Every structure is written in C-alpha cells, then in structure tokens.
Length: 68
Image (cartoon, rainbow, N blue to C red):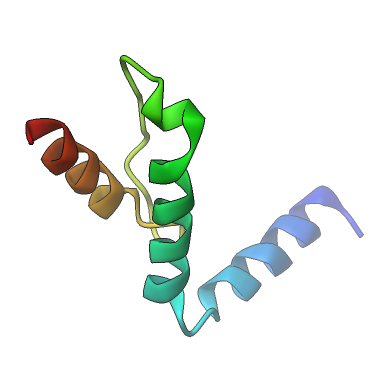
C-alpha cells in the first residue's frame, strides 16, 4: 500500500466517525487537564480543517478559561 493510499484510507475512516463531537470533547478535556497545558505560559494551536479534531472550540475554551 502506498503512502497516498494509506492517507486516502485514513481520511475516509476519519470522515466516517459518527460521535465526533463527543470524541473532540474527550480530547479537549484531556488536553486542558494535562500538565503541559496547565504549566504553559503560551500555547499555539492550528485551526482545524475538515474532519480534524475541532480545535476552534478548544481555542475558545482556552480563551474563556484564561479570561477568568
């Protein structure tokens, strides 16, 4: 299997995930509770694209937490 075929297969599998919001929330929770986040003075996050983990909501959550 070529790299391009593997990439295409993985994109298809990722696009078929049904409970995406629930999984995104779990990932956000793990990140926000991690020592990496808690000890960070600055974080940088790419804005998500298509079927990637929703980083837009994560960015909003971090901004809201830091504003408190």
